[in-house]
Image 1 (cartoon, one colour):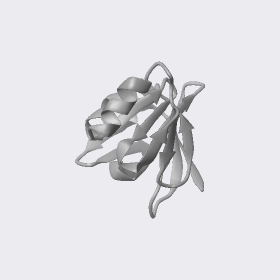
Image 2 (cartoon, one colour):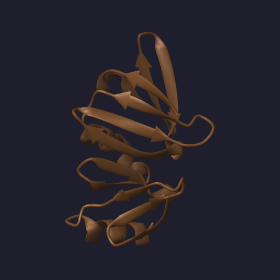
Image 3 (cartoon, helix red, strand yellow):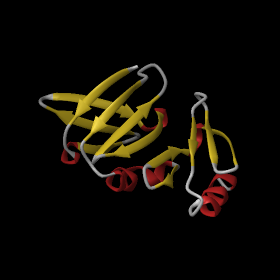
Image 4 (cartoon, one colour):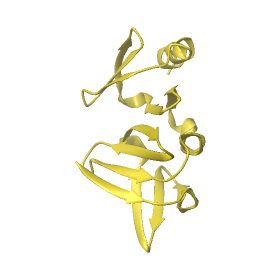
Length: 122
């Protein structure tokens, strides 16, 4: 899987159903429907993408800023470090979220009731 380093939240914007990131003259278009999840650590967010352009985009930003862009597109914050695209959730139980590509992410116990409700009612 390819990893692309991108710097700066000011370079991320929504355009139709895509996130467009511009860095050093290069433009990266990420289809929102292809985003599996976003993981955050050390002030870096990794946008994990599936589909034809399967890759990871590293962005220097807070996960909360990315969540503000994505929450209207069926994304849910399952942990302080994870945002998941509900369209890619195959199943969930015992605080575990099973994604369409086979990955499993542990959800926060504190958020579980809200997660359960949102997934059930999607």
